Image 1: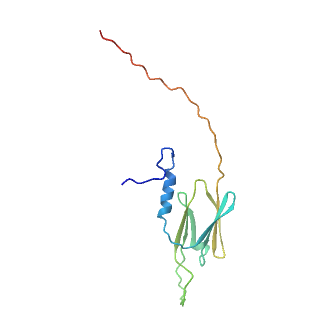
Image 2: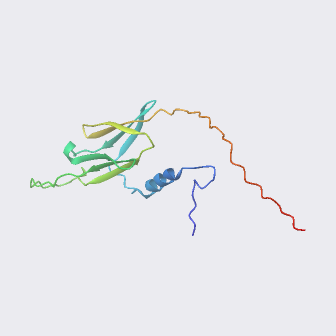
Image 3: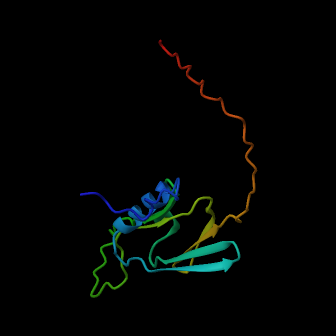
Length: 149
């Protein structure tokens, strides 16, 4: 069965990357852990904040993989011999991914009171106007018609 594409119009050229990004997002797990916020902090800047209570800097990794921001958390095994009567603070590992638009850069990350803040900078969109010169094409050689009498 043929796959229906949002970008299959002949007027949308070179948008296959957007389609691939949408597929990646749709395949992402719907797990809500850890909770996060995305906020606009300026005209060309964003901040992602993840609630990572119980995780230290050594337990977290932040990477950009093929225009995808990937945050992973994994705590070392608790071998202190503690006996929990109730354990409501999650200590499970996680992976949270965000697809980044072309040119979006991670500028900084900080951990403060159980909140991981990741600062992003969006590129300013510049409009470009470029004239394309039209060069004369080569004419097709006209075939000579030979009349036979």
